[in-house]
Structure formats: C-alpha cells, structure tokens
Image: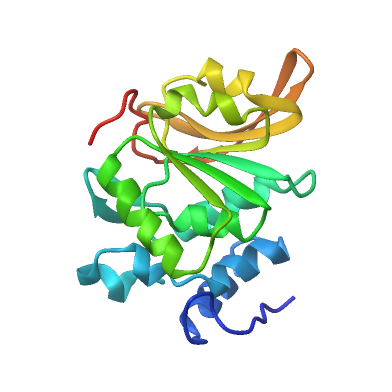
Length: 220
C-alpha cells in the first residue's frame, strides 16, 4: 500500500509529510487512516523554528518547558493501537504538548478532548491547531493524572507522558470495552494497552519507550 493524499490541512501540498508517512509504513505502521493523517499534517509548525529542518525526521525534538514532541513512529504507533478495535467516537488525550499528536487524533475521530498541565504550551498548541482548521478539539488546562471527569466515559484514552503507575482516574473514566494506550515506568518504561471489561482490565505490553514523566498538578 502506498500513501497517497491530496493537499495538506492548513497548507499547500508537499512531499515532506508524505515521505515521513512512507518511512513509517516501512517501519511497520499499517493503518491507512493513521498514515494519511501523518502525511497531511505539517509537523514543522509544531517544532521550534530553529529545529524546523528536522521536523520530518523520525525523531523526538525539544519544544521547551522540559517537554518534547514525540517521535513520529511513536505518535503513529499509539494512534494505531487506539484504533485497533474500531473508530472511537471520542478520544481523551493526556498531555497536549506541542499539539502534533492532537492534530493526528483530530483526523481520526469525531471529537478530541486534550488536557495539558502547562498553560503556555496549551496556548501555543491551540493557535497551531486552529491554523490547521481543526475545530473538533476541546482543550483543558489541568492535572492529567485526574483526566477529564465531566466528559467521561471515553472509548479511547492516550497518555503522552509516562506515569510511574497507571492513574486510577483514567481507568475509571474508560468506557466498557475502551482502550487506554499509555507508557508506564520511571527508569524503564513500557508502552501498554489496557482494555476495560466491565470492572476488570486486561493489559498488553507493546514495547520499550522513552517519554518525559507525567507530572501531577498544573502550572502556568
């Protein structure tokens, strides 16, 4: 399968995103909707201008405030894992960060709810997502460990920073049959998929990863 798309969201057609999607396909990403979203998304607007020349490399990059924009492979992999059992009507994202993962999710579902603990990062991400004409995203400044109770339950939850253990609030906000994709651990981190079955949960370990810590609380 080759990735073939039209114009990018919020910008002119270009090859950089398409080439990145093709590279990720070669590395094992197979979901065509995820690959198309990667191909259409202008990753360069989500990185500092001084690093724009590296925007379409398959690597994580610093975005300030001690945070990073995740490696595109990880963004695609986590998105693909969320969609494994079908298309969720809504997705809760814990850790808006640069907004790049948010932009991918917004192309995959009807509604994205995104929580960010650092107010300045949330403000910057909101402006960039609006420039892409993505309007199915609701954003909240708050503690990601607590999720977004008033909007629960969620069919899918994705966490883009690593807690030392799975937050109980996120498990409680997961709908029956829903999937939580989350990196867990401190020195050693494992990407996990947790599925809810009534009051029980099953867990799949996917691969070793490296994320910034999921810090409790919220800051300006």
